Image (cartoon, rainbow, N blue to C red; front, top):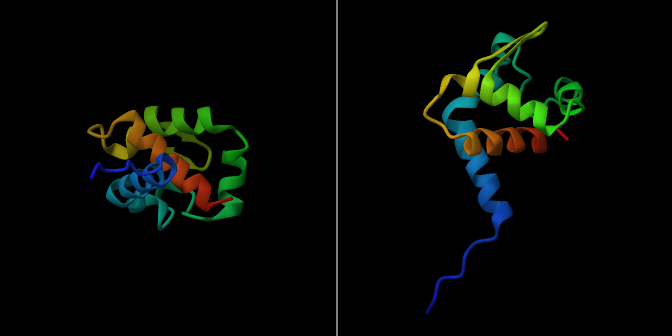
Length: 96
């Protein structure tokens, strides 16, 4: 029997959670360095309002703002841009 590929959406969500668990949770669980806490709708709303492209750019390239800083790729240069984007999507989905 041939294997049936899994739908893309759950795989993307799994990839986002995996990346989050490996790196992002270190700051986004406790709010370290001004990081918006996971699933904190009030903290995420103004960031989400900037648009996905801005969130991706800040997560991939790093960002320093009034509330704190985001190191490039969360300090994990070994992660691909796609892994970081999946993690951003995972966090945004949890905060909506």
